[in-house]
Image (tube, rainbow, N blue to C red; front, side, top):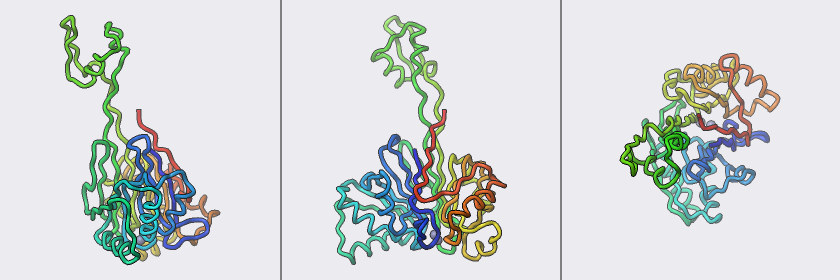
Length: 308
Ligand SMILES: [Zn+2]
Ligand SMILES: [Zn+2]
């Protein structure tokens, strides 16, 4: 499970940072890639990674500001040309369907794959055997959401040494012990699954917030995340400006990370007023409140390790 930042700038692209998009690569977990926001030229950024567009089967949109969605029509269209035939679902606030369908229709674009839409609201927005994705409303002038992606706990592994110790050797019986609560051996002995299965592995949690003012009550929504991605459009001294433009500062993002007891904070959506040489300054401001903080840059990657 890996996060790849495709665009980390706020509002307008700069030479150093493109507008917002983040990929959550889950090749090992479920063979797919999920995209969070799709600012203009996201497809160009993807070309510079090893992400294959047809592997992207879900796109979660935080809000409908242009720097988060103008890349959608181009990406969707190119995915068709690049042998994308599998279905794709776009999740986002009300209006996302109209924006995409209008763009495709007016430009006469026909997609070679089924395109589905889910207009989201607070609460669970997607669930399968492995993951649950839920949404919380933020504070950004227009409706903006955060997404919390929770990997379900992984079942415990069979512990073959314990079985060998009592003289049960590898074979079809192992599968039975793994799948059934109890199994009777040929000699009549009954084995209980719970005695030969290790503990469940806790799943990972990644929370990605869209543009927002500092909302202290979001601490529950972000709680215990392995990674929290938070916007940090401004430095600490610009708190008033951040409030007026419905954005957050370094310090505010760090406060939420601390209150939510997350493990790692990544700041993104950095104003173009800050060049690369400001990164240390921005990071240090956040680190005064929350030590494990990184400032994302375009193509910044982070592996989210499975827990033991
Ligand atoms: Zn934005
Ligand atoms: Zn915005």
